[in-house]
Image (cartoon, rainbow, N blue to C red; front, side, top):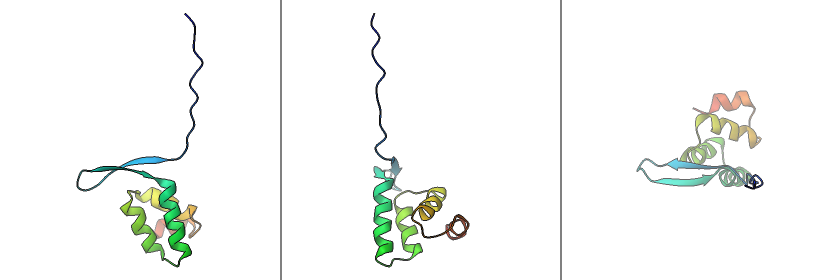
Length: 84
């Protein structure tokens, strides 16, 4: 019996399954949401507007805090204070 080589895998992006209030599930790419938030901030949106987009896309409190820090808008301490 010959042994086959192990499969190669690559991670192309983070994708999460989001369950909407109506029970419908959708796929969402974190990177596309973060790009949307970057564009909003570049056009003058405030942090609360960005948080609304993150929440609407299923980001948890922890993921929202990380996203704000990753977007370079606030420090970790400030993000923890701002995200409800």
